[in-house]
Amino acid sequence: MDFSFFLSAFLRLLPGVPLTLQLAFVSVGLGMVLALILALLRLSRIRPFEWIARVYIFLFRSTPLLVQIFLIYYGLSQFQTVRYSVLWPILRQPYWCAIIALALNTAAYGSEIIRGGLRSVPEGQIEAARACGMSRITVFRRIVLPLAIRQALPAYGNEIILMVKATALASVITMMEITGLAAKLISESYRAVEVFVVAGSIYLIINYVITRVIHLLEYWLTPHLRSVSTPVVIEREDAA
Amino acid sequence: MNDFGLMTVFSFAPGGWGAAMAAASAMTIAVAMAGFIAGAIIGTFGAWAKISGGRIVRSVADGYTTVLRGIPDLLVIYLFYFGSSAVLTPIGRFFGANGFLSLPAFFAGCLAIAIVSGAYHTEVFRGAYQVVALGEIDAAYATGMSRALAFRRIIAPLTLRFALPGLANIWQLVLKESSLISVTGLVEILRQSQIGAGSTKQPFTFFLAAAILYLLISSASGWVLQFAERHFTRGLRRG
Image (cartoon, rainbow over all chains, first blue to last red; front, side, top):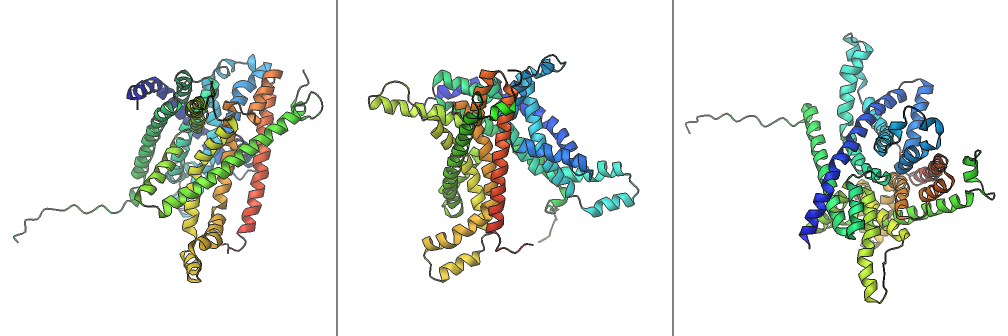
């Protein structure tokens, strides 16, 4: 075991962490907004809207993410209109292409999670809110959405971890995040196993931290599910 | 070249890419299938370890599933593709071969998919086993079946039945994951599309064709799996 190599590999890969986190969080954030819109379309009971969402979700869930990344990064440049459009400065950069692809992809999965959350809100709660005189929008904002978020949180946490893993694909379009740096280091040092161990541990640590944070959020959002805390023992001055 | 379109990619006429794309699709299906089956074998042992292993065996299995579900699949593919040469080259040198040896891309890819999907298989099989009613297993022993016979006739079929929806999910995952093997140069759908895109300067058309092929394969196999699920659960009462 050559510890100095592990250490130097760790130091070489560490600069990739910010980019990995950035890719993951920006795309999850954008994807979440799109996911909510898709979920609302899907539940809108308006046929054309429903179908748009359905088709979108079907297309993005049944093709590989790498194909989507390639379609956006390499594919769009095929069209002159894209190359001369105002969006070209963005679509030319691998960074934004990766984020767009990741966001579009996670939106498809996320919308199903959010839809499950929205549908899990008991009808009675909505009725009660309506009976109190809340408008539809207020009901959604104050009752439905918070309950749905709470319900969907564990599944969404999983999706975030999947996204952290998915950012590795950005290395294929030249992004030097953790996996990109790892591949480079492997081809320089021919020590695939050691580099793999180091890069893998970094991902595991990131994902572990995210899991803990999601758990904390869940704990914080579900005070009603906590077992009644053991009553505070008041010191009594028993004469016995 | 102006009228180059999807039709040309799928065309079998001279100048068309149909034959190449068809061969690439067969490669995708082959590598995904081989990886899936090998993963199922790993998953069977993983589930066994988790259900009836001792403390050490269990924690090894737990470690395996936790680690493999927490690191990117691409990293695992790199490990097997590049890592195999680190192991094989010295062995090759020992036997007198000089130069660089590594696993063929197909085997490295299968192995990577198997190791990754094995973690998912483990969880699916474990979950399915827990749904099998204890009474049925007890009944099998009570009628005098040996452990092996009970496993073959009772436990395995029942577990598989309950595992089917989960297995269908894993298959879809594996199918999409197989596209990552293109980084090792194995000519499957995505790699073939890259080749086509490079030589015709029509990247969008080729990657769109790749997306369509994946869509077709996943839809067709989804259909078959749904049919299988309906067939094998016909004995179950629906709630």
